[in-house]
Length: 234
Image 1 (tube, rainbow, N blue to C red):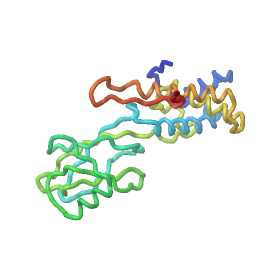
Image 2: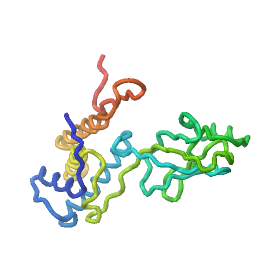
Image 3: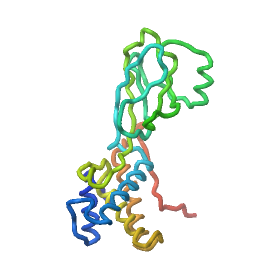
Image 4: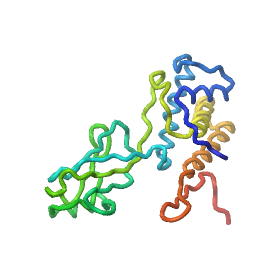
């Protein structure tokens, strides 16, 4: 099933779902109970898509200034960070090596100063985003260098009407299909019907296809996302 790269606003998504349900489209997300409920369904679908994998539509790169003697850093962003992909330092070649927190704690039992070569994630800040700790402790000669951090973000929580014209980062076809499945499940009061099952299976296939669109065919970029409904057969 082909999936295009068209993106919809919250209101456009709600209106397409309404058209597919043979309902009248609206200019307001507060016009009826179902339109308002669909915004909650959009949030649920976007959360599911973010948890499913790393989407190129949500990748961001930020620079953080290195301060001599400072080991902990935060990314200045209002977005919710899904996960950090890699981290480079302008004063050295190659990426910093990620270490698990338990390994990092063993390494930092001995304090050394120099050019940072390793990092870990330790806790979160008040916004729920990760704190980054580097090692060795930056020396005076590293002051003012830049950490280049590539990370993936989650879509924000959409609110009825105030986010009507906000663009959803994920492919529109996938989001619409996911919301249709949610509506079908709501209509049956949580009981999975054949209609819901067909819509949900279609959504899962579209989700997999969309995530795999921007993958390299050679080298270390090769990545495969298996289908959710396939089974091994003897």
